[in-house]
Image (cartoon, rainbow, N blue to C red; front, side, top):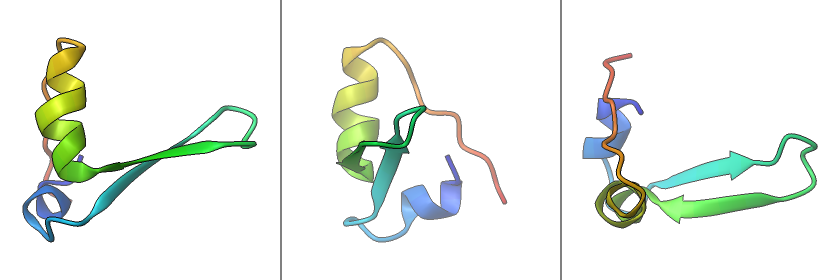
Length: 49
């Protein structure tokens, strides 16, 4: 995840698509980093782009 995006607007979204591109799921970036990833035992890796 781009650190700039993470630190940016609180209403930014992270969008994932299925492999066959028939559906998608959208998370608020804050929900992804504060709720979803900790719930599955992962921490985000931030990069500077």
